[in-house]
Amino acid sequence: MSTENEGNEGTAGEAVPSVPSAPPVPAAAPQGPSGSTPASPPGATHAPAHPEAPDAATARQPFAPMGEPADATAHTAPLPATPPPGFQSAAEANWPPPPPAVPAYVHHGADGGGPVWGAPAQLHSPEGPRKRGTGSALVAAVAAAALVAGGIGGALGYWAADRNGGNGSTTVSASADPQDLKRDPGTVAGVAAKALPSVVTIDAQGGDGEGGTGTGFVYDKEGHILTNNHVVASAADSGQLTATFSNGKKYDAEVVGRAQGYDVAVLKLKNPPSGLAPLSLGNSDRVAVGDSTIAIGAPFGLSNTVTTGIISAKSRPVASGDGSGGSNSYMSALQTDASINPGNSGGPLLDSRGAVIGINSAIQSAGSSVGQTQAGSIGLGFAIPINQATNVAQQLIKTGQPVYPVIGATVMMDGKTGGAVISDQGAGGTAAVSKDGPAARAGLRAGDVIMKFNDTVIDSGPTLIGEIWTHKPGDRVTVTYKRDGRTATTEVTLGERKGDS
Image (cartoon, rainbow, N blue to C red; front, side):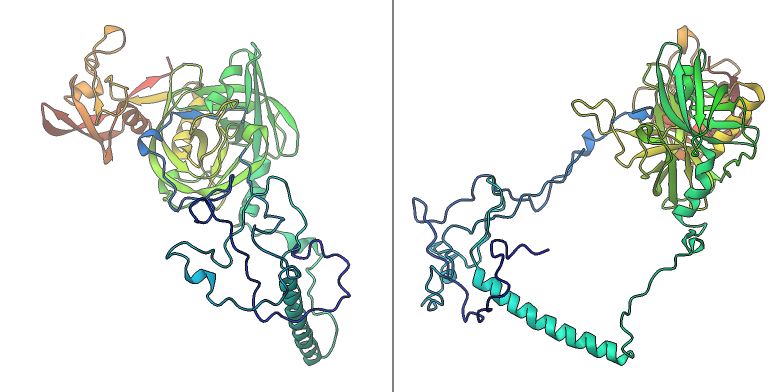
């Protein structure tokens, strides 16, 4: 709605004045001490033409797993309610005035002696809006033009209606049939409608009162729920676990098994309902950068939240912790820009067909602000590839403990060192390269720097572990390493380690 006529209420019936032959001329602008135009008023701001980007070197933050729950407010300055200084109303200026002999704007930019016609008014009025009286004749002229345009539009509308037989309204009403409101299966709404009944919100309460909220999804018809280890860790030993479905029905659950290193856990509903519909599992190895993604979870406790995005990257090395100072989890993750926040952990990352391609597990944080204990999504979310999670889930359901592939060597874990450096010694003073282990049999030694694992470039110890754990014990892999300035290649048959201890 236009506010140009504010302060002119009750004038609708008055005669519309004729269009002025020349625009109103501004009065002489107030001069500064040296005759120049005044500076911008206090409070006026100017947007920079090219905002500076943050330093890339300071953008890296630790990855954070997402547990239980953390405002940017758009602000616009009001337009001025009073005319700019130096402008007069039509009545005060003895309208219409004679045109100036030399327009003021002719000299602007040469000696700065005169104001430019139409110079911008102040963008912020701390006193609030006031009624506007300036420019009433101009407003009247605009109103007259609008009336003319309205008359033309009305005539054209009548002509069009007459050409169509003069049947009155030409609007078309949408069908009221509920069948017409069904979404196609391939749409986001269609995928969400099918998947939501198989996604649960997990509430984990430990015996010491510690707890949190996360997400999980139905893995099979027997009532197994797949989620993250860090979602249930606080209640795994002596706590209470519940799973709430999208229809509001809540069920008690228990831990079947969990793998801290993979950050995967399997729960089982104690009294599962009949008719459980497991989510279909996709193939994370066939995912491509740019593929559409759909994330479902309970960010900050808001259950049944659906967000969308794409696959931003694949094989992203991620090390995440549960915040308790325990051992980290390592993954070669799928990166997505779908909005993922604390509480999304353990929830499914779906492809455009609704098949699970990953388990949402971690986000990169830009850092928390004062008074904010948890940071939210900045478009950098990470999911465990479902192929890896499925292997882990099968192990946990079968034996209750995870099995990890290993190379039998201890590598340094401190940051990026241009490769994974095999340490001089292992934990507790043991040998860094296990005797008769996979690395020893392949000829690797302490001090060797592993540069590639198959075709993946290795830049650190965590990256190497994440890549190893995408495989199974017994897999043969090619390792490229550097020793004494020389590069060599060898084959390693991966061994195994059972359990997290």
